[in-house]
Amino acid sequence: MGPLSLGRVPLPLCVSEGEITLYLPARAPFAPLSLLLSWAQRGAFGDFRAKVERGEDLGAQEISLTRPEPERRALAERRWQAWTGLPPSDDLYLVQAGYIEHPVSITRAALLSLHDQLDALNRAYRAGGPGPMPDPDLPAPPEPDRFQLHLAEGIARDLDTLDAEITPDNAGAAAAKRRVLLVDLERLGLLDEALRARNDAAVEALWFPTLRGYLEAAFAIFDYLKSPERRAAMPSAPPFLIVGGPVSLDWFRLGPPIPPRSSPHLFLAFCEDTLTLENLVSPFPLGQGDFLCIAEHRYRIAWRKDDGVHPALLSATWAE
Image (cartoon, rainbow, N blue to C red; front, side, top):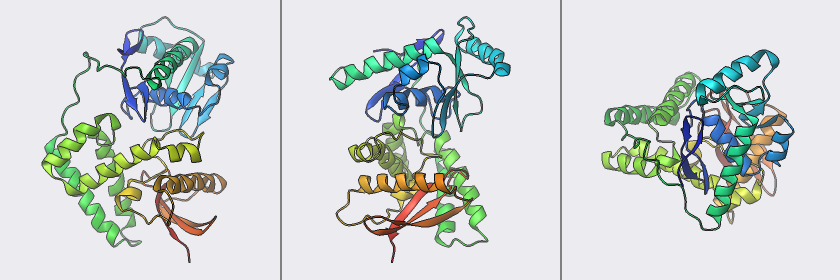
């Protein structure tokens, strides 16, 4: 199967987390559309089609689907026409993600059409049908620049040194360096699941041991997101991006202890759910911290705002 399209814009497909979805890089201007449709396929919004047909607004975590305010409707129409080359329409939705500056304008009919096409493709794929074919018009992703990888490896090593002896005096420097590193990892495509094989080969060939740890942690998060344990424990939870998501790369990179007889993915899903609820009840401050969780056992769950905004799970240990 080839790419879908909206007017003059091709929308290539890929398989991510076990489903066919639009392939749009995480920080691309139109990436929110891919994320919205992926979450809709997983049932994050309930009956997505019926709600959109009724013109309802929808939202989940970092993504929202809203009708434009009257004063923004003309701008939304111009963006839709400029993007697709299709005629303007006043029956528009705005797809907004917290990490993208401008919302994506899309007509209600086009949104429902894309949803229905992806739904049909995924039903056929789950029944044993073929996955998407590579788009011949898309250039192959370039290999990561060796010099940029070298710089990222240096930042990662410096950050480990700071984290090993963290103090109030150097905590700010560590936080800033962490944000720079995450931006670099994204820019190099190292946190893009669709480039998993390319990244694995490049980092292995050039032997950057610290980046290797980050890459393996990213792979572990990809595996966790599509694990049956997470879906069983959090059936309505949508997937998330690594940067700004509720699980730090250091959860897997540093290997927190897992309670005996507990599945690692099941325990992480429990911690993710707990973190989300705790932050909703009492939003966490800047920086990092921990809280006590009393369930079957007593756990101390540590979090850190790796991107400076969103709390992410760092570790969980037995509480004495």
